[in-house]
Amino acid sequence: MEDAALSKPTHQPVELRIGTPERARAEDALAEHLAAKRIDPAEFERRVAACRAAGTRSELMALFADLPAPHPSFAEPSDGTAPGTEATKPTSSDSKLWNNVVFYGLLLFYSWLTLNAVAIWGWWALLVMPVALAVVSLIGAWIVVLVRTRRRGGR
Image 1: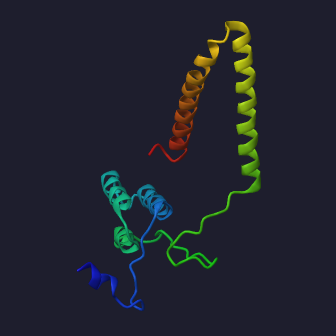
Image 2 (image 1 turned 90 degrees about the vertical axis):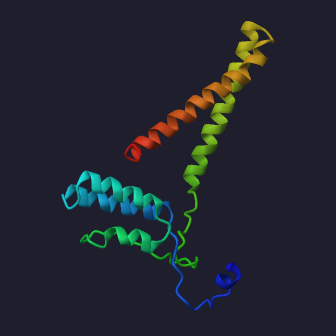
Image 3 (image 1 turned 90 degrees about the horizontal axis):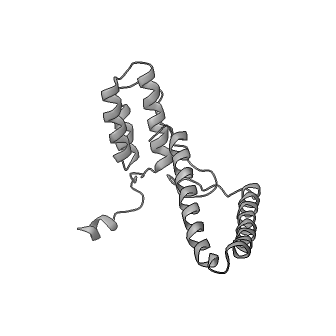
């Protein structure tokens, strides 16, 4: 059965899959319809849940069949990537530089902190410092996730 599906001619239209950016645009469009009172909060929640479960463009567009514009857009990349795929944006050199500055700054601070801890508390501090670094890293990661979640509207 799977062999038959794989052997279909390539000239037939393929149902294009969607990703997170398309779902986010659809959720934004649904939020505009909620703000315009075209749908009530319960209907909004139902459609957002269906939006998050959608896997293809047609499944997503079915949520907007009875609504006027705005609808989510599906811009095709013009850089030669396959249709329906999002073109990945290269990381700018500024953000790479910033990542390096933060990393090496933290490494330098950790080294300074370790040397001072050894001078004050003795060599046993070398055993405690990795645990302290892990705890601080986990707290920092938790804060980053919390901030990103709040920026995305608490989802």
